[in-house]
Picture (spheres, rainbow, N blue to C red):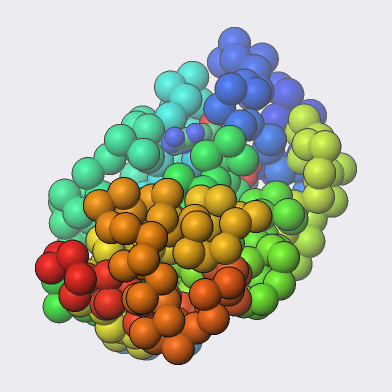
Amino acid sequence: MNLCDINTVKRLMSKYATGTKKGFGQNFLINEEIPYNIANESYSYHSMKNKASKKAVIEIGPGIGSLTSELCRLYDKVVAIEIDKTLIPILGETLGEFSNVEVINEDFLKLNLDEFLEKNLGECTISVCANLPYYITTPIIMALLENARRENGTSKFTSITVMVQKEVANRLCADSKSSDYGAITASINYYGEAKKLFDVSPDNFLPAPKVTSSVVRIELYDEPKYKVKSEYMLSRVIAGAFAQRRKTLLNSLSSSFAELSKEQIAKIIEGIGFDINIRGERLSISDFCTLSDEFSKVLNK
Ligand code: SAM
């Protein structure tokens, strides 16, 4: 069955008395080359990094299974998490030929990820691959990053390959100092490197979204490249630095750290060698780590 054939998509929807739901960000792929290429981009990197292991992938939002089936052809194990219960019987039919897939009807953002990984993918090396629902792209990527490390600092995931809106992809992959650089870019740079792979035009989806999409692969560091006293403090400092983009780093951080005076924050910024009028987007992830450790020192956290 060609799951990207527009008539097949419509026939399945009608057979199971359902339709595409805007509220769940449902834009299904209707060009089979795209899921084939996304799955190959995910798997080729995964197998290059993990030679001998059992290879698993988590897919968020399988829809009717077009990307899932390509992942099933490559990975040893696929776990697909779909929020829409009306799609579960469709996936039962479209993925029926594969014995290496498990479909879970859950909201990804409500999963206890560690419990889930231990229960489902204990022995495997794991990547994440998804055509993400656009309404929750950032929360999903942040949830994955914040859960990406084991207690010993090594990464739970090899890579996170996602299709997102092109404008978001530009932010994920931005260089520091560019206008696209923001809190999510700095957070990604702490955990790994984001690479833009290719663009996908709206006519490849049903229904067609208004904007172009892009596929990005976040390649996670096996071991931490940067170290901080507290990752919680780092995420507070990064969020605070970009909370008010038009303001200087000092003013933006002053609004977010009410427990410190502006003078104390100014002293921290100058103490690590930056001009007091610098803006958050000028700081690299290494600078943010230094800044975070200074906040930890002053706040004793
Ligand atoms: N993978 C399919 C494809 O490429 O054609 C569908 C992608 S569609 C853009 C996004 C999918 O994510 C939909 O199937 C939607 O129901 C699902 N979804 C939306 N929110 C979700 C959530 N919180 N947890 C899990 N799945 C979700």
